[in-house]
Amino acid sequence: MTDFDTISTGKKDGSDIHLRNVDLNLLTVFDVVMQMQNVTKAAQVLGMSQPAVSNAVSRLKSMFNDELFVRYGRGIQPTSRAKQLFGPVRQALQLVHNELPGAGFDPLHSERVFNLSICSPLDIRLAAIIVEKFKLISPNINISIRSFIDDNIAHQLKYQEIDFFLGYNQLEKSEYQHQVLFNDELVLVVANHHPRISDTISNIEMNNERHAIMAMDNISSFSKPYYYNTDLSHTINYQGTDLNSVLNIVAQTDLVAIAPKWLVERHSSQLKVRSLALPLENNTRPCYLTWHESTVRDRGHQWMKSQFNQMISELSEQAVAA
Image 1: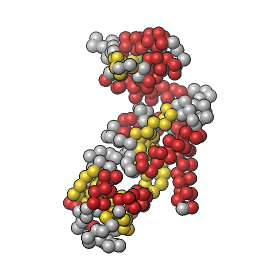
Image 2: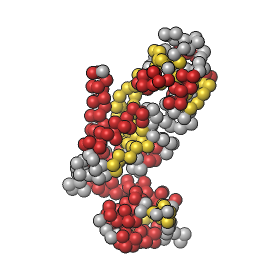
Image 3: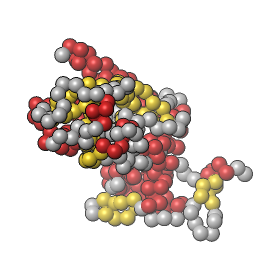
Image 4: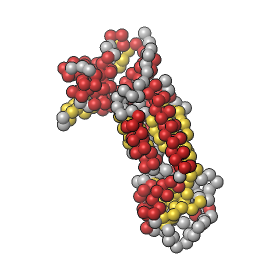
């Protein structure tokens, strides 16, 4: 018997359940209950009665030898074991679904939830546009966006807790696929009445200024490539949670910062800041759309990627027209 014939139960006696004896429909129930975190809502989504879903949850608890869900307010809350199972179960169900004959995706009628993570400051530029776009073309689809990115982003993509990641950083492992959506032009931003800087700045002069940056303590830091173990490391005088706070500090002090040109233009009149050409060999930064290889055959993912490409094309045309 191979390892694929058994499911580990987590029981202390080491016993296993033979896969052939498992009702795999229970995993579908588990997936929906985890998403809804409410048995009544899960029953509605599944087209089942509430008692039937409750019975399925009881069987899951027995299978995995864990409570899986505990009461929390008017709903339920997953246990640590349930959270561990959620990613692998979602991935397995999606892989099976992708290979079923006739497995398709109808954007006009689908009620699917797509989870996106967008790093700062790209969330400022793209989040509202994404929400409005999909509301018009696919009103039943739910687009869930989060702008806080942590170091678990790779795990979240792999196990489809997140469908897509939009950011400036690539994930190194080959199982993650990327597409460049566009390239941001970068500038040096300074206060309008900076005491030393006029219309241009050299590399040496920039290195002698004090800098404000986005904190470098996680994967989504915009500033990290320019300040972590580089010639500019010694210039750091302020670290903010996002580039908005960085621009606010720059506007009120003689600190300088590296930022996307579009962000500076958006805030220049309100914050009284201006931009200068960045004295670096490379003054652009690619924005990547990233997903896990296990979703490549997913029709919904294929459609989403085409919509992202169309959205960026429309933004580029608008920029040219302006």
